[in-house]
Amino acid sequence: MVDRDAAVPLYYQIYLQLRDEILSGQRPFGSAMPTEHELAELFGVSRITARRVLNELAEQRYVERKRRLGTTVIFKSPAKPIEADIDQAMDSLMALGSGTTVNVIEVNREKPNPTVAAALQVDAGEDVIRAVRIRYLDGTPIGYVVSYVPGDLAGLITPGNLGKGPILQLLADAGYKAVHADQTIGALQADPKLAQALEIAPLAALLRISRTSYDANERPFLLTFAHYRSDKFTIRLDLHGTRYAVN
Image (cartoon, rainbow, N blue to C red; front, side, top):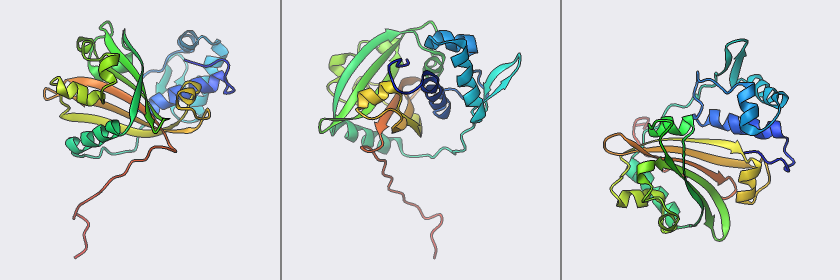
């Protein structure tokens, strides 16, 4: 989870990861942050390093630290959700998939962390399937994508299947069509792991897209975190409307 050989200090690597989790909504407003002891164990660092991470988050007004009450997220996204046609959005994602190639890094069955369990509405003890891919355009890596699905979809999410096309298409062909999705888009700096995978410098700017897809029964069946190089990926919107038209 941290690169001890990287030029980026350990505390800052951890700070970036936690900050990005807050900005993306993985750690929502009012949620409790890990304690210094829990952070130290999680990342294999000293309590002093863990304390520095939490203090830095507090100084930047992402969290609030109170004695005996712990550390709580106080960041609130000012963004109001924009409603859009999901079919058009999914078509754009399919087009991205068809215009690029993918390298499947790993597909594993594992226990979900609290963020993944909450998003997929599964119990912490249930298995989920985690798939990691790197997407290429003309031989250049442009995106590092991590997806999670409930454990009962394990038969669909295999390296062979993922190499054939976008995961959304794979699931749709099996009857799991997205009729609703929650998506957030934000910016972050590349940690050493992402920098190496995308062949960019540590702390380079990335675009992060987090998306939870739901079926017709409002069951979440796909959680995806996609990280795209800012020098290779742009989002284009074609906006229409008459609400503010001048006669």
